[in-house]
Amino acid sequence: MSASQNHIRRPAANNRQRNPVAGLAASAGISRRRKSRSPDSRPTSAGNSGPSTEHSKKKKNMVFTLWPHSSPQVGTGDEMVVDRGRKGKPKHSKHHSRPENSGTSNGQRQATGQTKSTKRHRSASRDSHSKTVSPARSASATGTEDEGSGQPAYTGPLAAAEFARLKAENEALKKQLHAMKKAEKKQNKALEEGKQELTAAHKSKKELGQQMDKLKTKSRKSEELLSSIEANVQCQICLEYLLKPFVLSPCGHVYCQGCLQNWFKSAPPSEDDMYDDDYPDYLLYRSKSCPSCRTSVRARPIPLFVVKAISSAVAKSKLPPSQANRASPPPDADPWAGIFPTNEELDGDFDDDMEDDEDDEDEEDYDEDSDDGFGAFGGFGAGDMWDALPGYGTDSDDEPYEGAYVEPGWAPPTVSIDPEDFEDGLDEDALSLLRRGATFDMIHAYGMQYSHEHGIRAVVGNGNTVYLGWNILLHEDDQLGEVYMTWVEADILERPERWRVSNNRRSGTWTAYRLVPEEEVEEYDDTDSEAWIGSEDED
Image 1 (cartoon, rainbow, N blue to C red):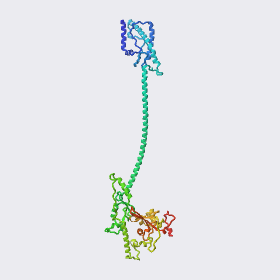
Image 2: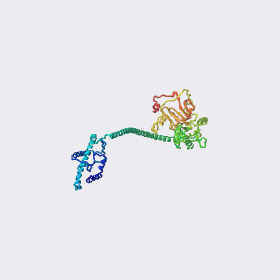
Image 3: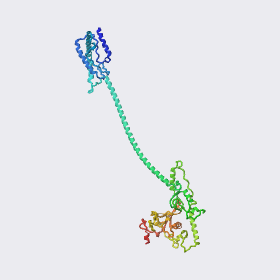
Image 4: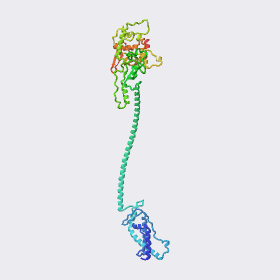
């Protein structure tokens, strides 16, 4: 090898060192190799230069068509084109000398010409090898391209393996998608159930709110009712619960036992009291009145068991649970002993008074010419007052009635009363009683009431009740009606055939109904009228 050739080959080696891309391409087996600038030992003929140049151009064109693709290519032989992501720089077929080499010798130019011919010869040998590879490569590059995309497809074992891997991955993704859809379906179902539960919870909350409002309303009403009951079961004197309530007759006011006992013992005496404080039984016979309305109280107070039960229940509701079950206080044996006389004492006093009046009847000297007061019973003695007053029993000169006594029937009023004559006005009950012969004193003293079905009702001593019929006929001298009521109580004992008496064992009282002779009963066409017809009878 001549010195000129060595001189020419060194720059080629230096050029490889300066161009690392060319070295990589050559090591990776790329079909296009860089042309060696060293002259070949074999002589090149001029006739072969032409075809090799054409093959070189074709080779360059083929390489440039495959170079821009970044995807790897699979060949039919052992040769594999590897794309490393770098775009090769095309080389011109003609090399121009640089301006600084213009002054070289003719020997160098000749060596350069030989080098070019050698390169052409090597290119021709490479073209012959690439003819066997390029048809398969071009078929794999162009024949399997996707239409519209211009990208080559995979073929061969690697493509099959990649296809199997992608297929398995696709199946796994399908299963994963199916599982996700299934989970989504379950979640949607759970979400719907949650929505339904939430709707039911809102509905239940709304219903509970309505029920709570109703319960609050009921609770408020119950508290108001309890407060009203609590106020009504309290004694008006001591403001304590009526655990021992007693009602006064005839006014009907209710007080506790202790307050009534203190009131009857310490109340100031009235002007009509004839007993002295030093008298041993002064409290028994002194006049007594109601603490509120000052109505005269003639009988013992009556216990009210219903009020007692209500008061006990209210009192227990206010106590703590530990004290709610304590026993009620035991009842007293006789709470009114020494304050009110018993029934036996009243009967004994009445009999004694009758005997004393009979004994003193002959000793009394009446002034026949005097028209002044007639004593305690309007000028009549206690023994003969019912016989002397017409209408208060049977006259002693008359023969006794041997017929039957029956209950009286309804009768119209007999007294003419004009409500306008009273400045304060009258209620319906008082007006009905006045029209039927009662007086104001009788109404207040005996708690009289009137009903169309039962007639006149009065309360006498010890809470006993008397029904007097539908009309009362008072004597002209008995303007207050006290003599008449005294005769009624005595007549019940002396003439039981003229009264129907029923005993109440629980309260210890009795009720008497007045009876009249059967021949005196009159029937009226209109029993619903309360109009006064006394003027028609007088005519």
